[in-house]
Length: 159
Image (cartoon, rainbow, N blue to C red; front, top):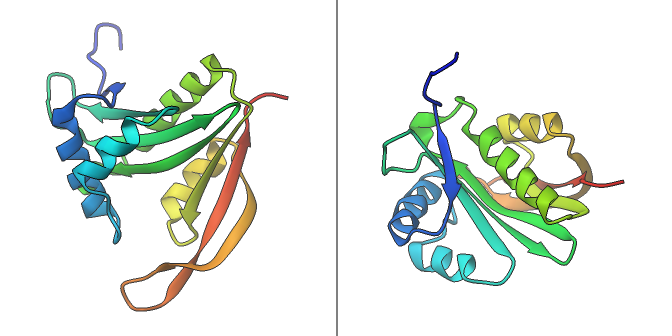
């Protein structure tokens, strides 16, 4: 609606205060989570960039994405949404910002890896026109000791 405030605002992941908060989201989302120091190290590397999503006026990020661009190919290093904010379109919003950034950088392709059992994420990536280009069998350890495969997915950005 006209004049309606957006549900979420996306900004670059650069603020030191955000790093502690995104590490907490990551820790709540993955068994082998990255800490604040790992995020600090990654975001300072050449070609790495990221975004956070938050409600307007809030200091608390509710989602994050970190990616790396090398020459003309990019990869999603991680993406996570706070467990209480899932299913609200935050993952899609973050991916849209990555794709816009890569378009402006004239990247040719974007790769990512996702646990085959993460049905919502796989559905989002397929909606965003990613296709499976590989598989790493028994890659992710599950909480029950079972291992699941990683899907390697690619989206071509330019023909």
